[in-house]
Length: 373
Ligand code: SAM
Ligand code: SF4
Ligand code: SF4
Image 1: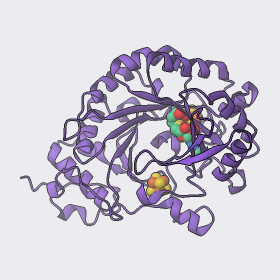
Image 2 (image 1 turned 90 degrees about the vertical axis):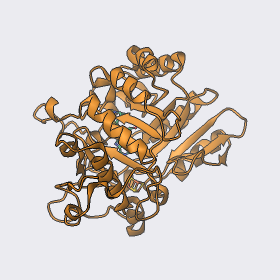
Image 3 (image 1 turned 180 degrees about the horizontal axis):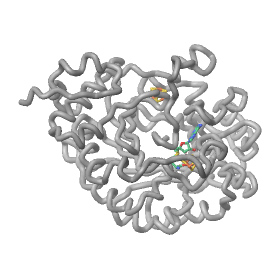
Image 4 (image 1 turned 90 degrees about the horizontal axis):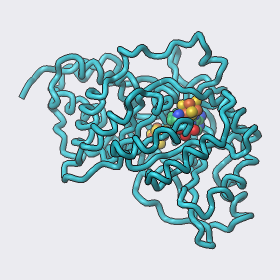
């Protein structure tokens, strides 16, 4: 076993790392962090670019023509992504979600999906392989994604009203084309489809009931996401957050609902079903009801940095290891060590503080379009 040690430049535990042999944490599928949380879900951002400019994610004033996105050479290649994903799977990851930016803008994405779809858990099971998209080119790509081995998709859609939708994506993109994308994804079998709506009070909260009505009685599961204070550019304010409890109350007043059990531990959405049996909705209450206690998600940025929390300021540079001649055993050891040191629980701390949690001088939270949702 090699004793070569791994330098992780921007790791919080950097001081400790050089003394630890890389293979200190062999992959057993049973990794736990400092709070006992297993590693089950890896979100992989495949591009930091997007054709939308949703104000809560990539506000136009910041992400304008002068903004510099990552150069091609910085992006992890499909081989690097697949190699990394395989090491995470050995540590217990069962679910892979491709995200971005807009993942469908990454050229030849179906090739990556084909590669990832061949991975198996240590007991030989296929992974849950999914993707989150704004749906803008889904109608065109759904069949190729399905053929490549993608199992299902989550589509973001913030309004049914065309004018509100165009205003929210801020590039004048029509809602009809996203609805076509959802229909095509359904037709080719990329289901069960989830539709995510970020709710901003005063911007699109009047769309809640219309959205519920539209998807009620279809196999699509609509989920309402509380507007979060991710990144540093969206000008988040607590008074623009509509608590999920209000979302549920508004829908319940029209279409009676009852709570149902989570599908799996670590599921972000709280589930509700229509009493008349016409389907279910979910609410993701990252602001008003933090779910850090069973957060089992790791995030791999477009350029190969590993983030342990959506609200992190720093990532761990796995690309340096991938391109630095390290063995699988060494990189798996580093991933294990990083996860074992994890104690992130930002939303819980924010909840306890009753407000956004401040950062140290010169620190900046990572942006959503870079890390993926
Ligand atoms: N472009 C794709 C999309 O929009 O589905 C994938 C990437 S996007 C960053 C992933 C998810 O994050 C989307 O569902 C989006 O609505 C959500 N999101 C982005 N910024 C958010 C914020 N400030 N609060 C809550 N959700 C947010
Ligand atoms: Fe693009 Fe998705 Fe961010 Fe909207 S939420 S700007 S679609 S990455
Ligand atoms: Fe997980 Fe961080 Fe979100 Fe808590 S705040 S649920 S630890 S990503």
